[in-house]
Every structure is written in structure tokens, then in C-alpha cells.
Length: 311
Image (cartoon, rainbow, N blue to C red; front, top):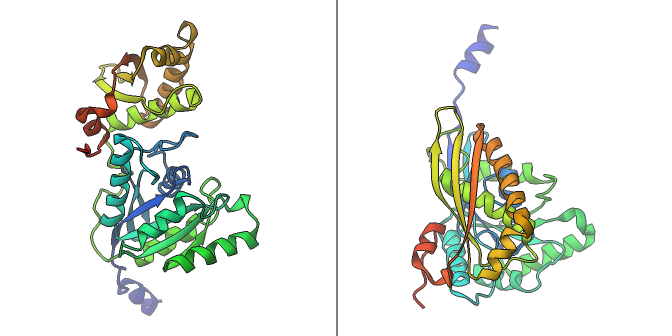
């Protein structure tokens, strides 16, 4: 009994590991859903609208003795506008700053379109790369194996994982692998921190998600939400004032809805989720303002955490 106790007491504690892991892929490949799954909490917004993620969002997962800092990058696509160019630049910048790159592919879409172009771009990036095939529950296994073989033929991936970000299948295996292979080193963040996104910005992102979920067919992509006021009240509640920026009066009417029904529904859904995240009552006030060509305003880019393209 004594020998066993001494053996346990003398056992070495495994070294801590930490590192940055970039999630890259085409639009709507499931990066934000996967980030939230791996972190175990909502840190990145999700909607059916393409290019929902605009700037790099960091989600922090603690797994065994490792702290894994995931970077959810904007979907990579062929840019057409200034905002598009800023987002794509941000995504590639996140990939080049990471210790490991996870290339996420929608298994239903395969290598069509942007996914193939992204793989070509990865040939110039020298970090270790892991292939992650998402939405595997929607595709026959034979097709998954064919897709994995084609991707690995195009570029050398260290490993291939087949997952479903929606139901969690395969995600634990991915976490296990990252926790064992990231570099040894101290953790970057406190153990209980799950994101480095300021709460004011996360609150704006939550409202933007509800806006897209409610009006994704009617409202153009070029809408933006900013938290203008955050007041902690003596009764333990918080008062939040946010502005939804659109580019035209016609878009303002859509955001408000008939008799204000749309803005009320968006506010209610956002307030409910924010109350759950903050664990305190939330009084949310939304305003809609028209700001023409806000997509050419450097200040709006700074608010989103993006560099303003000069050309």
C-alpha cells in the first residue's frame, strides 16, 4: 500500500500545452457551429446567411492539460466589395498566425467552388494542416472516403477527421488529437475564460444573429449592429442600447417590420439569449439608423475588428 502511494505521489504531472488553431473554410462550411461545439458554449454567431462571421472570433477550450485557442475566421470566398476583401484578408491572416490549421469542408458540397481554391491557397501556408470533413451524417461513407482521398491528393494533411459539428460526432477525437499535439507551454488565458471577445461586442453579435435569422431573405447582408451604451444597474440588471445600421430607408422599414413587429421579435430573442449568457436581467433597446455606404467607413471596420482596405 505504501509503495503504491509513493508511486502515485512521485508521478510527474504532464506538461501543459497551448496553441492557436485556425478554423478556415468556405462560407457556411460550419465553422462557427464547430467552434461553439468544441468550446462548449456560444462564442460565435450562426445563421443561414453566408459570411455571417466577419472578423476573427477566438474561442478557448480546455481539454485535459491543454488550452486550445480556436480562431473562427470569416468564410473565404471571391471578394467583390471592400468589406469582402477585409474579411478574406482577415481569414488568411488568422491562418498564417496559427500553430495548426483546420481546413473545414462541407461534405455535401465537397471540393466545389471556394473549397478547391482555399486548398490551393493553403499550399503557400506552412503550418501543420488537418482536414475536417463536416456534416458526415448527410453523406454516404463511400463518398466521404472519396472526398478525403481527393483532398489529401491535392495537399498534404497531417490527419483527417470526419465529424458532425451539429451533433458532436467525432469532435471529441479531434479535441484529443489537438490536446496531445499542441506545443508545450503555459496557458494564455484564465482557465474559466471561453472567449476574448468583449461583452459589448458579443452582445452586438448576438443581436446581429437574431436580425439575420429573422430577416435573412429580406434584409441585405450589409447591415451592422453596434452596442452604444452598457449600464449596470443597482438592481442587478443591465441596460443595453444598440443601433442597427442599414444603408437605405427601405431597409430600415424591413428591419422595423409592420407596426414594429420585426424589431420587437429580434429584441425579444436577443434579450433572452443575453440574459442567459450574462446570468442577469437584460433591458435591451434597439434603434435602426440609416447610414449610407457604411461599408466604406473605416470606423465601422474598426468596430468589427477588421483592417480597412485602402483599395
